[in-house]
Length: 175
Image 1 (spheres, rainbow, N blue to C red):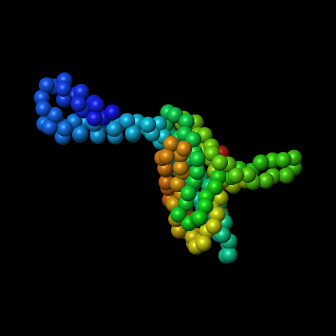
Image 2 (image 1 turned 60 degrees about the horizontal axis):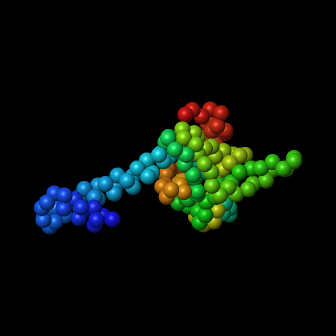
Image 3 (image 1 turned 45 degrees about the vertical axis):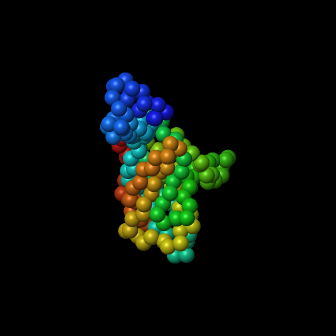
């Protein structure tokens, strides 16, 4: 396809192809980059107030919480989470069944344009599994959101024993 476009451009200019290739290569490369970036231009994810629960001795599992905002004009399909300290990271939600509550893994979540996905204690949260070297309180952990389109949004989350002030739930969150 690109070769056809180059050939057509050279023929329409009526000059030898050899002299046009370097300039055309730059033009076509720039166009390809613009098309590729436009495909993901609607995905503008931003983390806020992210923290990881400090782990008791011997534990290999902990949780992460925070807000993931979609500042774009298109819905983003969140397909996964990864972290710098765990072998696996999963999104979980708490479901009520009668008077019982249980955790269920969530495989993907849609974040509508200009909306916030809240990960909070007692609700939807991030489970960090297979933690072989537990982070210490006050240290930071990288948390990354992975979209179905292949983009990634990462942040540094502070390890805390309990929720930082004002972050017990999302009622105090501002967009």
